[in-house]
Every structure is written in structure tokens, then in C-alpha cells.
Image 1: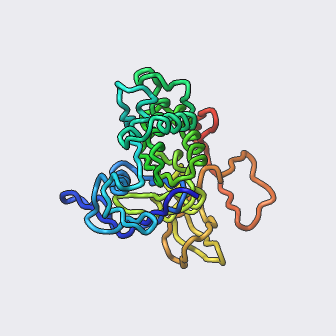
Image 2 (image 1 turned 180 degrees about the vertical axis):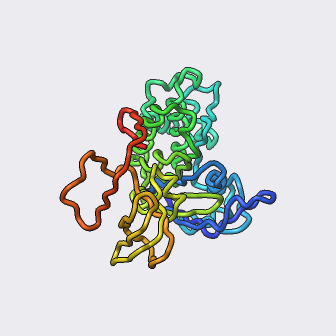
Image 3 (image 1 turned 120 degrees about the vertical axis):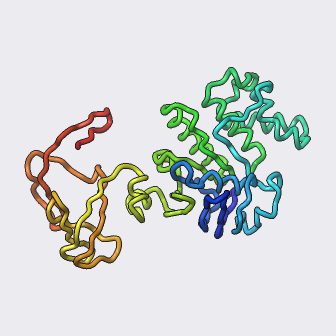
Length: 321
């Protein structure tokens, strides 16, 4: 497998009085499509810039295959970055934009032609080689920037919200293409985004950040189904929070008195005792709404009676309030 392992260890960064990163530590495995997810201002782009060499931490270590990247100049790291803006040269054709890194290295013309054609084929732009950026759509421009980043054959590709300038449908299309490109080249992708659906769709694993801290690292399934706290649960998808007092505890379940709902059974992911006040979460798709009381219940199912105040139809789903 191509790509590099990365280890971020105890990284801190302060700008003025604001602590941007707070003792950040996690590992990215070789060849992973790894996403760093969080709201604006949480420190995710700062962390990406440190891996790329555009920023320096106050302390901590960033290792690539056990080599300390902080001791290497940006141009000595086998890391390339794709930014939010396409950063293409408007006076160069698609071919020459992609060829630019090789021309800087004074690679022979025959090799340039072979490699550029290879990567234009990878991003499905062979027929657009002679066009200029102004003649391309947003998605095509982004594919040119991807080909230009990959032609250097980096071990790690950094993607800083690369789809944010695209409309919703094109973003979905480009997500699929990014995933396909990752599978073909096999290197380590580090994808920074604030969009939960983007991260869930393509990632092998996700790091969720808030206020400069990494709250949870896990697979999309782990992050969605077993969030470590209320912020992660609320940030990843939609959910309902229920708060109440523990009445009884069982082996894996607790009975909780919730105002307006009565006593309900919840699955415990941490140890609780009678009298504790707890907050639990349930995803909307785990709830079934019926006009008649359900039958064939088991002991762990909850049945509550309620009134639908409003419903919102959006094609693929209907939300009940």
C-alpha cells in the first residue's frame, strides 16, 4: 500500500490570547481516507496547515512514518495540498497547469507528457487538456487541481474543504469521484470539512473537533451510533435528546423518568446509578410512528403516546414535530 502513517502528538497552538489547538493527538493510518470534521474556527484547517508546513505548532510532534515533519521544509515533505480555491494559473492550459510541478523539477518532456496524460485520464479530463481554466466548470477546475497535486506522487494528500465552492449536486458528484480517485492512487487522504454528510460518506475514519480539541476518533458507524458526548451526537446528523432521572438499573439498560414521556428504558454506554440525572439520545430513524399501539413488543422497547403538531415533507423524508 502507498501513502504514509501520520502521528499527531500533543500539538498545541496559540494565536494571541486564543488557544487554537489544545494538546491534539491522534494517528492516521497508511492509505486511509481520514476526515477532520468540526465547525468553523475549531482548529481543523490550522492542523492541516501544520502537516503541510504552512504553520508551526507551539509544541508537539507531527510524524510521517516516524520522520518528524516539523524538521523538514514544506517542499521537502511528500505532502501536497488542495485548497478551497482552485489556485489554477489562468494563462496556462489544463495540460500546462498539471505539468507545472514537473516543469519546476525540470523533468524531461517525454516523461511530462506521459505523466500529465496519466493523471488527466485519472480525473477524466483528457478531452479538456487544451482548454484554459476560464472555459471549465467548477468541478472540472477542482479536478485539475487534484491532478496537479497528485502528479508529484505525494504520500499524503491534504484537502482543505475542497468542495465548499461547488453547488450541492456537484459536491455529491465530486465526493464520489474523490473516493474513486483515492481507491485508485491508494495514498493517504486527509480531508478537512465542516459538512457531516461529506465526512460520513467517504471516510474510513473521522476525527471530530471542537474548540481546538479532538473529541472522538472513529469510523463513521462508531461516530454516528456511539457518540462520546452530546456535542458529537448533535453535530453528526440529527438526533433527539431526552433528559431525566434514573429510577432503576439493569444489566445493560436503565429506566429513566423523562418529563412528558414517563418512564423509558435506555441502553447504557456508561455506568449510572439510581438517582443520577442523565441525557440520552435517539436518532429519528430509530423511532416508529403508528396510529395504533404496536404489538409483539419485547421488554426493551419503549412505547409512548404523543401528538403530531407539524410535519415537513422534503421528498426523500418526512419530519414529524
